[in-house]
Image (spheres, helix red, strand yellow):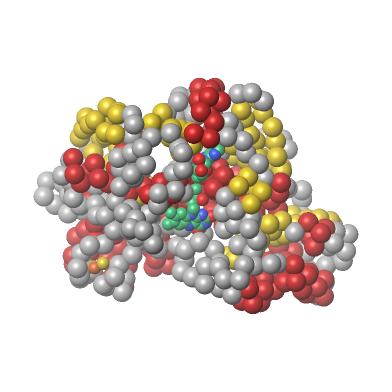
Amino acid sequence: MGEINTKFVEHEYDYVKPASLDEALDILAEKKEKAKIYAGGTDLLVHLKMGKGGDMEVMLDINGIDELFGVTKSEDSVRIGGAEKIWVLETNPVINELYPALAKAMSLMASVSVRNMASIAGNFCNASPVADTVGPCMCYCGKVELKSKERGVRYVDATEFFVGPGRTVIEPDEILTAIILPIPKENTGDSFTKISRVRPDIAKISLTCVVTRDGDKVDTCRIAMGTVAPTPKYFDEISEALNGKKMTKELIADTADALEAAIKPRKKSRSSTPEYKKAMTHLMAIENLEAAWKASGGELA
Amino acid sequence: MSMHEITLIVNGKPQKLTVKSNELLLNVLRDKLFLTGAKYGCGIAECSACTVLKGDRSIMSCLVPAVAADGWEITTPEGLVVDGELNAVQEELVNKGAIQCGFCTPGMAMTGTACVRENPDADEAFVRDYMRGNYCRCTGYQAIVEAILAACEDAKNGKRV
Ligand SMILES: Cc1cc2nc3c(=O)[nH]c(=O)nc-3n(C[C@H](O)[C@H](O)[C@H](O)COP(=O)(O)OP(=O)(O)OC[C@H]3O[C@@H](n4cnc5c(N)ncnc54)[C@H](O)[C@@H]3O)c2cc1C
Ligand code: FES
Ligand code: FES
């Protein structure tokens, strides 16, 4: 391995900090992939220090753009500004009330100082299979709002956003301006757990589950996992198989079996074997399905 | 590569500087302002030796481009000392024997200060969770946690944090 000196950034680039979204989109429209967005820098600066800056010519600091910040609740959804800091979001009352699994996932990320710097859009756009905010947003039927100068605004389901490790549908001239989460229906419960080597470390494996209850039946169920595939993954068929069924311990066990069979972990990743990940998937599926069902007000015989 | 005129408000004092776009806040603090309290450990946000405060929140100066910090109010470990007096967290780190080689100590003082300011009613679990990103190779953490808990008490008794 070549010597890497993380004391400096050797990569050379220009720095710009536009004060408006239009200005930022103009720069991106012109520079395309030569411009790289700087939000919290907790992924970008690490890449730059590791000599993985590619052909970046411009660092575009989006922290001067007011409309990329804040949490706004409307009648049917909550809009989370893309550049908003993880610590602001994890302590936000609306997010804690409506999306506790997302708040929990964020509070378990990294360390307090990283969370003071990092943004939610950065977590999505870095597109690591680990990305902790993604599973909860997928399970809450979240949408990603993307803006560009040429094509205006478009919305992509969180479940359709990722194409491969480090790759998303985002075009080089686009900014992720917001994550939009619909307001959950009544009798919705959720749960998130993550296993890592030590607390500030990234996940070996994570699982989110969101269930909406209809009496003793499942109205809808959504399950997503981190670090078991090249991207964060939503399990559509396995989740939807629960819809309309009476919730029982057997149903939960069957779902855990199905998830364990469905995941295809890499041979060796983050020092955990595929066997370990499969065994943990089974346990975590049961744990989270039970917890989400209870949180939705349901009882388990 | 672009050059930038910036103003950092460091330990309450505005500092006008000219920086290159790829210079890092940690290096500017250490090499241009000669504030060597914040340390270079890992360079990739994993150890917290380089922690400074932006307002009352802790950040890692090894990952911040100095130009992006234009206008920020930064406190370095030196800034916790007022008129020659340590703040409560620094003093308790000394009192509790929480310092061995001392390399992690400035970062501990910074994150610890943020912790006490955020929640002076913190219990041990809160402190350990808050400090989870600050690595120490020497002490085994026990004395550091005790020091921060003691600083919480001091803060409630009116001592400066
Ligand atoms: C020590 C350490 C621990 C970590 N632990 C965790 C963890 O436990 N869980 C976890 O999920 N992650 C973890 N991370 C990764 C990282 O902190 C997160 O992914 C974070 O959310 C990234 O946000 P950022 O604002 O810092 O992104 P940046 O580094 O600023 O950007 C990341 C990427 O996204 C692009 N980008 C940023 N914002 C936008 C936007 N609005 N529109 C389009 N593109 C954009 C950037 O150009 C860049 O390519 C860790 C990182 C470190 C250094
Ligand atoms: S030197 Fe900044 S976190 Fe280690
Ligand atoms: S006292 Fe030596 S690293 Fe903490």
